[in-house]
Image (cartoon, rainbow, N blue to C red; front, top):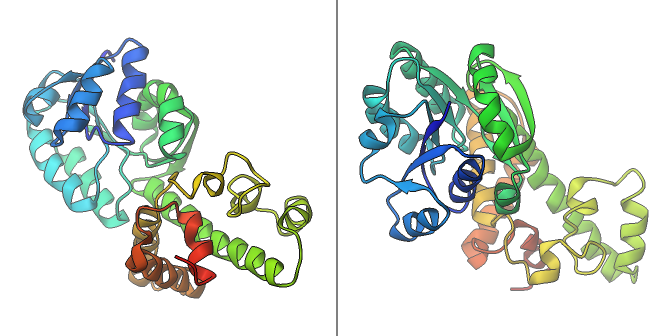
Length: 293
């Protein structure tokens, strides 16, 4: 595969496309944003003015879009414009039902398809160290591997159609819950007169350890690279965490699974977003829980 159509050149898609260019792929990009197109062009992406034109000559089509409705709308156009047998890789984070609907449409059009949402944020997209959670056939996964290798550091085949999305929303439900728990613990420690470094030294090496403490600690100091040391600049914005928690709860309801902590985490992040925190890193919820703005 040498020609890739990349649809969605925003904060995540732009750096991912740029890494494919660096690996000598011919990347034809499309986005509705002039700023996104200009930045991608600076990084060697050939900007195409219509989706059909971008897809028509591509060996693979990669999408990075906001929601399931956008994915299905784009697939309605691109599946008609693509060559038979083109590989479709969706790296968006969308609901499982939309993902599986997109897979069915691709299969009916004679295309290979993979849902491959990512973890790692803008930093991982830029560095090419993203984790890909892939759902789809082994044939599609094997064919996509060379492209995912360029953009990521870890690639996991999670099973059949939509299972990449399932893994992503389950993982991020854990993340949202654990960040709230970590934030509550540090707030409690502060009121009890326990130094934040002391709590970190204990929790990061004992039964309380988790990514939200060890790597992304919500208080300044213990982990110098965490957003807490940069006034909670994202990172991973609270609005995106809320989106993923909503997806997890939609999936829980449709499948009849009880997720009371996931549900409460969604409520808390909704309140944090409503209070003006949507553009803040999701770890900034520690200040909201403390009653600070």
